[in-house]
View 1 (cartoon, one colour):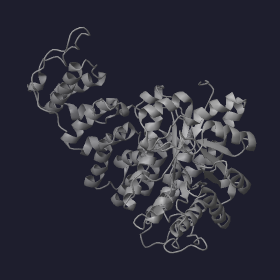
View 2 (view 1 turned 45 degrees about the horizontal axis):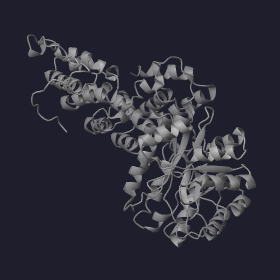
View 3 (view 1 turned 120 degrees about the horizontal axis):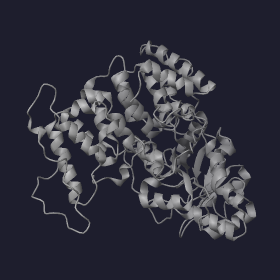
View 4 (view 1 turned 90 degrees about the vertical axis):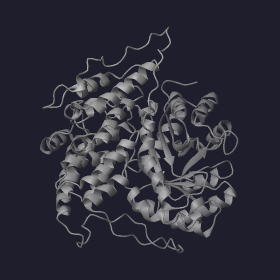
Length: 279
Length: 292
């Protein structure tokens, strides 16, 4: 998980070379400056003017396709990868320097929800990831419905970097129970460690439906002679815990986490008919 | 024959059309980096929106897929020559500028001629200007039909463009076009195919005559009859013909790195498959699908 913004910035600066650190200072200052501009303001300096069209071209190519007149912070957001990727790693747990730089730029620029959606929709994989990581850090916060559309979009992908970023503190606080449970299952399916999920203990606690889904998944794996992800037991134990203030729920069933895997020599035991899984 | 030290950069291959088996075989053959130019899908697009979905895939999903197999993926973006003739597709030119800023975009391309129409003239000139404005090199496809005339017309347009020859890669060259292309000062690309374009032995003969300077070799593998391992076959043929390992490294690694490196967007540090990073939080292997 990302550390609070101040320590995120400090940690990043310590890892950047002098030139990249200067860029970060400029990027954050210009992002904060852009934040206070209104739509009626002219584009800020630093964005190249429209180029003249190539000679001898015909309609419709006589229009120009120059470097876009984007706010400075958006250009910095795009360039962060090239500038920060080589930052020295001080520990394997440190936030990715490119993620950190982009989250800091987004926080400083405070884009509106529409801009945030556009950045995500037309972003590279890494840019999308940064938007997802920034969701809980933005001030003012994004409109929840639109922000959740981005989270749910990421959860539909098979890109584990996006899935993990989508299930951060914003999803823990806002994602509905059905989508969140499917997020947990998606992590187990795709190999994202459940440690990546923000608020796992809180949200899973006493969630009988999640427990059922996990048990069904464990059953499906063992029936196929496959191993059950190690993380599943942890989530299942949490889901069987009573939520605070609730006691005596059926989730305290003494049933073992999942049946033992079949031996290699014996066929899988017959299984009773089960409802079809959700598509 | 795979030498442990061999490293290959395929500077033109359409991986969205290929399987994960291809990625694994490419890695085993020495491929560690590639460039995927945007191009025609084999079926016409009908709107700019489908271009944007394609660009998004080249900037998101495909690099992710490649990284699972230890291969650094980059792309070139453009309105391709064939679809430059369809007015429904032209508005994608308005969308290109903001995409060209992205990490992983190492050139404007494929641009150039297909049927040598006025619409293709316009798209080529406009996109060469785009490359210049964005400080990117350009990957220029030379036409399959009427190739020599197509190259001559391409060189005319290049002379009028603001883009310097050393920032242009002329692709799909052969014995009939390599001389004029070399004289232009541009980089020289050769596509090695099972039956058409070039083959490894003809490529070796060209290398003997022209040397290795500014020469790039690619598989241009796509959805058609093609082979993503052709770059390795050229390396084998070069060694069998008496070229040194250093010559192979020049053609199959250092030259593409030098050309696309002009973008400032190359990132070649991808961990090998199975490395610890692949098991890391954000690098798990969803391509195994896990039953989805």
